[in-house]
Length: 482
Image (tube, rainbow, N blue to C red; front, side, top):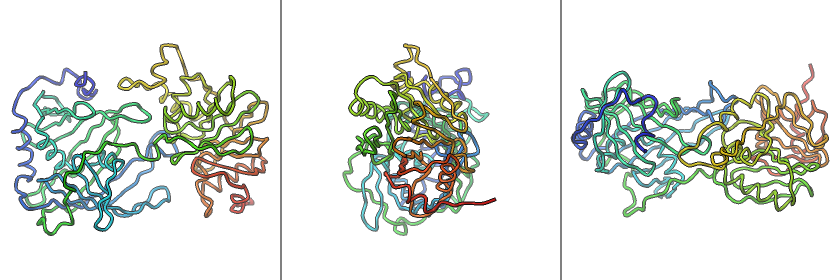
Protein backbone atom coordinates (compact mmCIF):
# COMPACT_ATOMS: atom_id res chain seq x y z
CA UNK A 1 0.00 0.00 0.00
CA UNK A 2 2.80 2.43 0.87
CA UNK A 3 4.65 1.79 -2.38
CA UNK A 4 1.42 2.17 -4.34
CA UNK A 5 0.74 5.46 -2.58
CA UNK A 6 4.24 6.66 -3.39
CA UNK A 7 3.92 5.85 -7.10
CA UNK A 8 3.14 9.40 -8.18
CA UNK A 9 1.30 10.18 -11.36
CA UNK A 10 4.66 11.09 -12.90
CA UNK A 11 5.79 7.52 -12.33
CA UNK A 12 2.90 5.50 -13.69
CA UNK A 13 3.25 1.73 -13.59
CA UNK A 14 4.03 1.23 -17.33
CA UNK A 15 7.25 3.27 -17.03
CA UNK A 16 8.64 1.16 -14.17
CA UNK A 17 9.98 -2.35 -13.90
CA UNK A 18 11.31 -4.33 -10.91
CA UNK A 19 15.09 -4.29 -10.48
CA UNK A 20 17.51 -5.74 -7.96
CA UNK A 21 20.96 -4.63 -6.91
CA UNK A 22 23.18 -3.55 -4.04
CA UNK A 23 21.88 -0.26 -2.61
CA UNK A 24 25.08 0.38 -0.66
CA UNK A 25 27.13 0.18 -3.86
CA UNK A 26 24.77 2.57 -5.65
CA UNK A 27 24.86 5.08 -2.79
CA UNK A 28 28.64 5.00 -2.44
CA UNK A 29 28.97 5.56 -6.17
CA UNK A 30 26.72 8.64 -5.85
CA UNK A 31 28.85 9.90 -2.97
CA UNK A 32 32.00 9.34 -5.00
CA UNK A 33 30.87 11.16 -8.16
CA UNK A 34 29.77 14.15 -6.04
CA UNK A 35 33.15 14.30 -4.28
CA UNK A 36 31.91 13.26 -0.84
CA UNK A 37 34.40 10.41 -0.50
CA UNK A 38 37.34 12.84 -0.74
CA UNK A 39 36.37 15.08 2.17
CA UNK A 40 38.24 13.66 5.16
CA UNK A 41 38.63 16.41 7.78
CA UNK A 42 36.87 18.83 5.42
CA UNK A 43 33.52 20.62 5.39
CA UNK A 44 31.44 21.57 2.37
CA UNK A 45 30.84 25.31 2.40
CA UNK A 46 28.44 26.95 -0.01
CA UNK A 47 26.51 30.14 -0.62
CA UNK A 48 22.97 29.74 -1.89
CA UNK A 49 19.58 31.41 -2.09
CA UNK A 50 16.21 29.83 -1.40
CA UNK A 51 13.24 31.32 -3.26
CA UNK A 52 10.12 30.23 -1.37
CA UNK A 53 6.65 30.36 -2.89
CA UNK A 54 4.10 31.79 -0.44
CA UNK A 55 1.05 30.33 -2.15
CA UNK A 56 -0.53 29.85 1.28
CA UNK A 57 -0.85 33.59 1.97
CA UNK A 58 -0.88 35.39 -1.37
CA UNK A 59 -3.69 37.69 -2.52
CA UNK A 60 -5.00 35.04 -4.90
CA UNK A 61 -5.22 31.24 -4.65
CA UNK A 62 -3.44 30.93 -7.99
CA UNK A 63 -0.13 32.09 -9.45
CA UNK A 64 1.65 34.47 -9.40
CA UNK A 65 2.35 34.26 -5.69
CA UNK A 66 4.39 36.21 -3.18
CA UNK A 67 8.02 35.07 -3.28
CA UNK A 68 10.61 35.29 -0.53
CA UNK A 69 14.28 35.12 -1.45
CA UNK A 70 16.61 34.25 1.44
CA UNK A 71 20.40 34.18 0.90
CA UNK A 72 22.37 31.95 3.26
CA UNK A 73 25.69 30.30 3.91
CA UNK A 74 25.74 26.58 4.65
CA UNK A 75 28.39 24.29 6.11
CA UNK A 76 27.89 20.54 5.80
CA UNK A 77 30.05 17.83 7.39
CA UNK A 78 29.61 14.59 5.38
CA UNK A 79 31.08 12.31 8.07
CA UNK A 80 28.55 13.32 10.76
CA UNK A 81 25.65 14.72 8.73
CA UNK A 82 25.79 17.99 10.70
CA UNK A 83 24.39 20.91 8.72
CA UNK A 84 24.88 24.51 9.86
CA UNK A 85 23.02 27.34 8.09
CA UNK A 86 23.30 31.09 8.64
CA UNK A 87 20.60 32.98 6.77
CA UNK A 88 20.55 36.69 5.96
CA UNK A 89 17.68 39.11 6.50
CA UNK A 90 14.94 38.88 3.88
CA UNK A 91 11.79 40.74 2.91
CA UNK A 92 8.35 39.69 1.75
CA UNK A 93 5.22 41.77 1.34
CA UNK A 94 6.89 44.72 3.04
CA UNK A 95 7.76 42.67 6.15
CA UNK A 96 11.36 42.09 7.21
CA UNK A 97 12.50 38.73 8.53
CA UNK A 98 15.65 38.65 10.61
CA UNK A 99 18.48 36.27 9.86
CA UNK A 100 19.24 33.23 12.00
CA UNK A 101 21.69 30.37 12.51
CA UNK A 102 20.67 26.74 12.89
CA UNK A 103 22.49 23.47 13.41
CA UNK A 104 20.66 20.37 12.28
CA UNK A 105 21.25 16.67 11.85
CA UNK A 106 19.37 13.56 10.86
CA UNK A 107 17.39 13.32 14.08
CA UNK A 108 17.55 16.70 15.86
CA UNK A 109 17.83 20.44 15.19
CA UNK A 110 18.94 23.46 17.21
CA UNK A 111 18.77 27.20 17.09
CA UNK A 112 22.19 28.79 17.60
CA UNK A 113 22.51 31.79 19.93
CA UNK A 114 26.14 32.78 20.37
CA UNK A 115 27.63 29.55 21.78
CA UNK A 116 24.33 28.09 23.00
CA UNK A 117 22.35 25.41 21.16
CA UNK A 118 18.60 25.61 21.72
CA UNK A 119 16.74 22.36 20.96
CA UNK A 120 13.55 22.88 18.93
CA UNK A 121 11.24 20.17 17.57
CA UNK A 122 9.36 22.87 15.61
CA UNK A 123 12.63 23.94 13.98
CA UNK A 124 13.41 20.28 13.29
CA UNK A 125 10.13 20.03 11.36
CA UNK A 126 10.94 23.22 9.47
CA UNK A 127 14.46 22.08 8.54
CA UNK A 128 13.11 18.68 7.54
CA UNK A 129 11.49 20.40 4.56
CA UNK A 130 14.75 22.04 3.43
CA UNK A 131 17.44 19.53 4.43
CA UNK A 132 16.81 17.36 1.32
CA UNK A 133 17.58 20.38 -0.89
CA UNK A 134 21.19 19.59 0.11
CA UNK A 135 21.74 16.46 -1.96
CA UNK A 136 24.95 15.72 -0.04
CA UNK A 137 22.83 15.47 3.12
CA UNK A 138 20.38 13.17 1.32
CA UNK A 139 23.08 10.72 0.25
CA UNK A 140 24.83 10.89 3.65
CA UNK A 141 21.54 10.17 5.45
CA UNK A 142 20.71 7.23 3.18
CA UNK A 143 24.16 5.73 3.64
CA UNK A 144 23.96 6.17 7.41
CA UNK A 145 20.51 4.57 7.64
CA UNK A 146 21.77 1.30 6.17
CA UNK A 147 18.25 0.16 5.29
CA UNK A 148 17.93 1.19 1.63
CA UNK A 149 17.22 -1.33 -1.09
CA UNK A 150 17.11 -1.26 -4.88
CA UNK A 151 13.47 -1.73 -5.90
CA UNK A 152 12.86 -0.78 -9.53
CA UNK A 153 13.86 1.20 -12.59
CA UNK A 154 11.57 4.07 -13.60
CA UNK A 155 11.64 6.76 -16.22
CA UNK A 156 11.99 10.21 -14.69
CA UNK A 157 12.82 13.37 -16.59
CA UNK A 158 12.90 11.43 -19.88
CA UNK A 159 15.58 8.90 -18.78
CA UNK A 160 15.52 5.58 -16.91
CA UNK A 161 16.62 5.91 -13.26
CA UNK A 162 17.48 3.36 -10.62
CA UNK A 163 15.03 3.69 -7.69
CA UNK A 164 16.18 3.04 -4.14
CA UNK A 165 13.61 2.88 -1.35
CA UNK A 166 13.79 2.94 2.41
CA UNK A 167 11.25 3.17 5.25
CA UNK A 168 10.76 6.37 7.22
CA UNK A 169 8.35 7.65 9.85
CA UNK A 170 6.11 8.85 6.98
CA UNK A 171 6.21 5.62 4.99
CA UNK A 172 8.45 4.73 2.06
CA UNK A 173 10.85 7.27 0.55
CA UNK A 174 12.28 6.85 -2.96
CA UNK A 175 15.65 8.08 -4.22
CA UNK A 176 16.25 8.19 -7.99
CA UNK A 177 19.83 7.67 -9.19
CA UNK A 178 20.93 8.07 -12.79
CA UNK A 179 22.24 4.71 -13.98
CA UNK A 180 24.80 6.02 -16.48
CA UNK A 181 26.43 8.71 -14.30
CA UNK A 182 25.62 7.79 -10.71
CA UNK A 183 24.24 11.27 -9.89
CA UNK A 184 21.11 11.60 -7.73
CA UNK A 185 18.15 12.94 -9.73
CA UNK A 186 15.24 13.16 -7.29
CA UNK A 187 13.91 12.22 -3.86
CA UNK A 188 10.22 11.48 -3.36
CA UNK A 189 8.08 11.05 -0.29
CA UNK A 190 4.59 11.70 1.02
CA UNK A 191 4.04 14.24 3.81
CA UNK A 192 1.08 15.13 6.04
CA UNK A 193 -0.44 18.57 5.45
CA UNK A 194 -2.78 20.62 7.64
CA UNK A 195 -5.01 21.73 4.73
CA UNK A 196 -4.61 19.07 2.05
CA UNK A 197 -4.36 16.02 4.31
CA UNK A 198 -1.24 14.70 2.64
CA UNK A 199 0.86 15.84 -0.30
CA UNK A 200 3.29 14.26 -2.74
CA UNK A 201 6.72 15.87 -2.35
CA UNK A 202 9.54 15.60 -4.86
CA UNK A 203 13.03 17.10 -4.58
CA UNK A 204 14.61 17.53 -8.03
CA UNK A 205 18.39 17.97 -8.48
CA UNK A 206 19.20 19.52 -11.86
CA UNK A 207 21.89 21.20 -13.96
CA UNK A 208 24.91 19.89 -12.07
CA UNK A 209 27.98 22.09 -11.64
CA UNK A 210 31.56 21.40 -10.62
CA UNK A 211 33.70 23.56 -8.36
CA UNK A 212 37.12 21.89 -8.34
CA UNK A 213 36.37 18.42 -6.96
CA UNK A 214 32.95 19.30 -5.56
CA UNK A 215 29.80 18.53 -7.53
CA UNK A 216 26.39 20.01 -6.61
CA UNK A 217 23.21 20.75 -8.56
CA UNK A 218 22.87 24.18 -10.10
CA UNK A 219 19.32 24.12 -8.72
CA UNK A 220 17.51 21.96 -6.20
CA UNK A 221 13.73 22.29 -6.10
CA UNK A 222 11.11 21.11 -3.63
CA UNK A 223 7.96 20.28 -5.60
CA UNK A 224 4.65 19.81 -3.77
CA UNK A 225 1.85 18.10 -5.70
CA UNK A 226 3.74 18.96 -8.86
CA UNK A 227 4.23 22.68 -8.17
CA UNK A 228 7.54 24.30 -7.10
CA UNK A 229 7.50 25.41 -3.46
CA UNK A 230 11.21 26.12 -2.83
CA UNK A 231 13.88 26.66 -5.48
CA UNK A 232 17.49 26.72 -4.30
CA UNK A 233 20.21 28.17 -6.50
CA UNK A 234 23.88 27.81 -5.62
CA UNK A 235 26.68 30.33 -5.72
CA UNK A 236 30.20 29.73 -4.43
CA UNK A 237 30.90 26.11 -3.46
CA UNK A 238 34.11 24.86 -1.85
CA UNK A 239 35.67 22.42 0.59
CA UNK A 240 37.33 23.99 3.62
CA UNK A 241 39.33 22.49 6.51
CA UNK A 242 37.05 21.39 9.35
CA UNK A 243 38.89 23.63 11.79
CA UNK A 244 38.09 26.65 9.58
CA UNK A 245 34.34 26.05 9.85
CA UNK A 246 32.16 27.31 12.71
CA UNK A 247 30.97 24.91 15.39
CA UNK A 248 29.58 21.73 13.78
CA UNK A 249 29.40 19.44 16.83
CA UNK A 250 25.95 18.16 17.68
CA UNK A 251 25.18 17.53 21.39
CA UNK A 252 26.32 14.10 22.55
CA UNK A 253 23.54 11.58 23.16
CA UNK A 254 20.89 13.94 21.79
CA UNK A 255 17.46 12.30 21.76
CA UNK A 256 15.63 12.11 18.42
CA UNK A 257 13.08 14.90 18.07
CA UNK A 258 9.51 14.61 16.94
CA UNK A 259 8.43 16.97 14.16
CA UNK A 260 6.03 19.37 15.84
CA UNK A 261 3.53 21.64 14.16
CA UNK A 262 4.60 25.25 13.82
CA UNK A 263 3.37 27.24 16.82
CA UNK A 264 0.90 29.27 14.78
CA UNK A 265 -0.85 26.04 13.72
CA UNK A 266 -0.92 24.41 17.15
CA UNK A 267 -4.58 24.17 18.30
CA UNK A 268 -3.91 25.32 21.85
CA UNK A 269 -7.06 25.68 23.96
CA UNK A 270 -8.34 29.23 23.36
CA UNK A 271 -9.13 31.83 25.99
CA UNK A 272 -12.41 33.75 25.86
CA UNK A 273 -12.61 37.55 25.71
CA UNK A 274 -16.04 39.08 26.09
CA UNK A 275 -17.15 41.77 23.68
CA UNK A 276 -20.75 41.57 24.90
CA UNK A 277 -23.14 38.98 26.24
CA UNK A 278 -23.58 37.65 22.68
CA UNK A 279 -20.16 38.23 21.12
CA UNK A 280 -17.00 36.50 22.31
CA UNK A 281 -13.44 36.30 21.02
CA UNK A 282 -11.64 32.95 21.13
CA UNK A 283 -7.90 33.51 21.27
CA UNK A 284 -4.89 31.21 21.39
CA UNK A 285 -1.22 31.97 20.59
CA UNK A 286 -1.76 31.28 16.90
CA UNK A 287 -5.09 32.86 15.97
CA UNK A 288 -8.06 34.74 17.30
CA UNK A 289 -11.61 34.07 16.07
CA UNK A 290 -15.01 35.52 16.91
CA UNK A 291 -18.36 33.95 17.85
CA UNK A 292 -21.55 35.95 17.88
CA UNK A 293 -25.17 34.91 18.43
CA UNK A 294 -27.46 36.96 16.17
CA UNK A 295 -31.15 36.13 16.42
CA UNK A 296 -31.04 32.31 16.55
CA UNK A 297 -27.86 31.85 14.48
CA UNK A 298 -24.28 31.50 15.70
CA UNK A 299 -21.76 33.18 13.42
CA UNK A 300 -18.17 31.92 13.47
CA UNK A 301 -15.76 34.47 12.05
CA UNK A 302 -12.99 32.38 10.47
CA UNK A 303 -12.05 28.75 11.02
CA UNK A 304 -8.31 28.55 11.59
CA UNK A 305 -5.74 25.84 12.33
CA UNK A 306 -7.78 22.73 11.48
CA UNK A 307 -10.09 20.06 12.86
CA UNK A 308 -8.84 20.13 16.44
CA UNK A 309 -9.30 23.91 16.77
CA UNK A 310 -12.75 23.75 15.15
CA UNK A 311 -13.82 21.07 17.62
CA UNK A 312 -12.81 23.32 20.49
CA UNK A 313 -14.73 26.22 18.95
CA UNK A 314 -17.77 23.99 18.62
CA UNK A 315 -17.51 23.04 22.30
CA UNK A 316 -17.37 26.72 23.23
CA UNK A 317 -20.50 27.40 21.20
CA UNK A 318 -22.28 24.75 23.25
CA UNK A 319 -21.12 26.35 26.51
CA UNK A 320 -21.72 29.97 25.55
CA UNK A 321 -24.95 29.57 23.61
CA UNK A 322 -26.78 26.47 24.86
CA UNK A 323 -29.43 24.98 22.65
CA UNK A 324 -29.65 24.14 18.99
CA UNK A 325 -28.56 26.93 16.65
CA UNK A 326 -27.81 27.09 12.93
CA UNK A 327 -24.08 27.70 12.35
CA UNK A 328 -22.74 30.15 9.77
CA UNK A 329 -18.97 30.18 9.24
CA UNK A 330 -17.65 33.38 7.69
CA UNK A 331 -14.45 32.90 5.69
CA UNK A 332 -12.96 36.37 5.40
CA UNK A 333 -9.89 35.46 3.33
CA UNK A 334 -8.16 32.43 1.84
CA UNK A 335 -4.79 32.22 3.58
CA UNK A 336 -4.44 28.48 4.12
CA UNK A 337 -4.07 28.49 7.94
CA UNK A 338 -7.17 30.73 8.11
CA UNK A 339 -9.41 28.15 6.39
CA UNK A 340 -7.98 24.88 7.74
CA UNK A 341 -11.06 24.37 9.95
CA UNK A 342 -13.60 24.77 7.14
CA UNK A 343 -13.74 21.04 6.41
CA UNK A 344 -14.86 20.32 9.98
CA UNK A 345 -17.71 22.82 9.77
CA UNK A 346 -18.84 21.48 6.40
CA UNK A 347 -18.99 18.03 8.03
CA UNK A 348 -21.27 19.52 10.72
CA UNK A 349 -23.64 20.95 8.13
CA UNK A 350 -22.69 24.61 8.67
CA UNK A 351 -23.26 27.20 5.96
CA UNK A 352 -20.03 28.74 4.65
CA UNK A 353 -20.24 32.42 3.70
CA UNK A 354 -17.42 34.10 1.81
CA UNK A 355 -16.61 36.37 -1.08
CA UNK A 356 -17.87 35.05 -4.39
CA UNK A 357 -14.28 34.78 -5.66
CA UNK A 358 -13.48 32.36 -2.82
CA UNK A 359 -15.81 29.62 -3.94
CA UNK A 360 -13.51 27.71 -6.37
CA UNK A 361 -10.73 27.46 -3.80
CA UNK A 362 -13.07 26.43 -0.97
CA UNK A 363 -14.53 23.76 -3.24
CA UNK A 364 -10.98 22.45 -3.77
CA UNK A 365 -10.46 22.32 -0.01
CA UNK A 366 -13.72 20.47 0.58
CA UNK A 367 -13.34 18.10 -2.39
CA UNK A 368 -9.80 17.06 -1.44
CA UNK A 369 -9.72 13.44 -0.29
CA UNK A 370 -7.95 12.73 2.99
CA UNK A 371 -7.30 9.05 2.34
CA UNK A 372 -4.19 8.62 4.53
CA UNK A 373 -5.64 10.07 7.74
CA UNK A 374 -9.39 10.66 7.34
CA UNK A 375 -10.66 13.78 9.10
CA UNK A 376 -14.21 14.67 10.19
CA UNK A 377 -15.28 15.55 6.67
CA UNK A 378 -13.82 12.40 5.14
CA UNK A 379 -15.67 10.28 7.69
CA UNK A 380 -18.89 12.20 7.01
CA UNK A 381 -18.92 11.79 3.22
CA UNK A 382 -21.02 8.64 3.50
CA UNK A 383 -23.82 10.84 4.88
CA UNK A 384 -23.81 12.86 1.66
CA UNK A 385 -22.48 16.08 3.20
CA UNK A 386 -21.69 18.86 0.76
CA UNK A 387 -20.51 22.44 0.76
CA UNK A 388 -23.38 24.84 1.49
CA UNK A 389 -22.01 28.14 0.19
CA UNK A 390 -23.46 31.65 0.29
CA UNK A 391 -21.65 34.33 -1.70
CA UNK A 392 -20.91 37.94 -0.83
CA UNK A 393 -20.30 40.48 -3.57
CA UNK A 394 -20.23 44.05 -2.24
CA UNK A 395 -22.08 43.42 1.03
CA UNK A 396 -24.58 41.06 2.62
CA UNK A 397 -26.85 41.61 5.63
CA UNK A 398 -27.71 38.53 7.66
CA UNK A 399 -29.71 37.65 10.79
CA UNK A 400 -32.36 40.24 10.04
CA UNK A 401 -29.71 42.91 9.53
CA UNK A 402 -27.89 42.31 12.83
CA UNK A 403 -24.70 41.22 11.03
CA UNK A 404 -23.27 42.71 7.85
CA UNK A 405 -20.44 41.24 5.82
CA UNK A 406 -18.76 43.56 3.35
CA UNK A 407 -15.88 43.45 0.91
CA UNK A 408 -12.80 45.41 1.89
CA UNK A 409 -11.90 45.65 -1.80
CA UNK A 410 -8.69 47.69 -1.64
CA UNK A 411 -5.85 47.02 -4.07
CA UNK A 412 -4.24 44.61 -1.57
CA UNK A 413 -7.48 43.17 -0.17
CA UNK A 414 -9.56 42.23 -3.18
CA UNK A 415 -11.69 39.21 -2.33
CA UNK A 416 -11.38 39.76 1.45
CA UNK A 417 -14.29 40.47 3.80
CA UNK A 418 -14.81 42.26 7.09
CA UNK A 419 -17.77 41.71 9.42
CA UNK A 420 -19.83 44.15 11.47
CA UNK A 421 -22.01 43.22 14.45
CA UNK A 422 -24.40 46.16 14.63
CA UNK A 423 -25.68 45.79 18.20
CA UNK A 424 -22.14 45.76 19.58
CA UNK A 425 -20.72 48.24 17.06
CA UNK A 426 -17.99 45.63 16.70
CA UNK A 427 -15.80 45.22 13.62
CA UNK A 428 -14.14 41.93 12.75
CA UNK A 429 -11.23 43.00 10.55
CA UNK A 430 -10.15 39.53 9.37
CA UNK A 431 -6.33 39.50 9.09
CA UNK A 432 -6.23 42.98 7.61
CA UNK A 433 -5.46 44.94 10.77
CA UNK A 434 -2.43 43.27 12.27
CA UNK A 435 -0.93 46.13 14.25
CA UNK A 436 -1.85 49.66 15.23
CA UNK A 437 1.66 50.88 15.93
CA UNK A 438 1.85 52.65 12.58
CA UNK A 439 -0.20 53.12 9.42
CA UNK A 440 -0.20 50.29 6.88
CA UNK A 441 -1.72 49.62 3.49
CA UNK A 442 -4.07 47.03 4.98
CA UNK A 443 -5.25 49.45 7.67
CA UNK A 444 -5.86 52.16 5.07
CA UNK A 445 -8.04 49.78 3.08
CA UNK A 446 -10.05 48.62 6.09
CA UNK A 447 -10.76 52.14 7.32
CA UNK A 448 -11.75 53.18 3.79
CA UNK A 449 -14.18 50.24 3.57
CA UNK A 450 -15.71 51.06 6.96
CA UNK A 451 -16.18 54.67 5.87
CA UNK A 452 -17.72 53.52 2.60
CA UNK A 453 -20.26 51.44 4.55
CA UNK A 454 -21.06 54.40 6.81
CA UNK A 455 -20.18 52.59 10.05
CA UNK A 456 -18.64 54.01 13.23
CA UNK A 457 -17.37 51.01 15.20
CA UNK A 458 -16.75 51.23 18.91
CA UNK A 459 -14.24 48.36 18.95
CA UNK A 460 -12.49 46.02 16.57
CA UNK A 461 -10.47 42.84 16.65
CA UNK A 462 -8.73 40.64 14.09
CA UNK A 463 -6.92 37.33 13.89
CA UNK A 464 -3.75 38.85 15.35
CA UNK A 465 -5.16 42.02 16.93
CA UNK A 466 -6.66 41.98 20.44
CA UNK A 467 -9.91 43.74 21.25
CA UNK A 468 -9.14 47.42 20.67
CA UNK A 469 -10.99 50.75 20.64
CA UNK A 470 -11.74 51.88 17.11
CA UNK A 471 -10.18 55.26 17.88
CA UNK A 472 -6.75 53.57 17.82
CA UNK A 473 -7.35 52.67 14.16
CA UNK A 474 -9.24 55.81 13.16
CA UNK A 475 -6.31 58.04 14.10
CA UNK A 476 -4.45 56.65 11.07
CA UNK A 477 -7.40 57.04 8.72
CA UNK A 478 -6.55 58.65 5.41
CA UNK A 479 -9.26 60.87 4.05
CA UNK A 480 -8.33 61.11 0.42
CA UNK A 481 -10.32 63.63 -1.59
CA UNK A 482 -10.61 63.36 -5.37
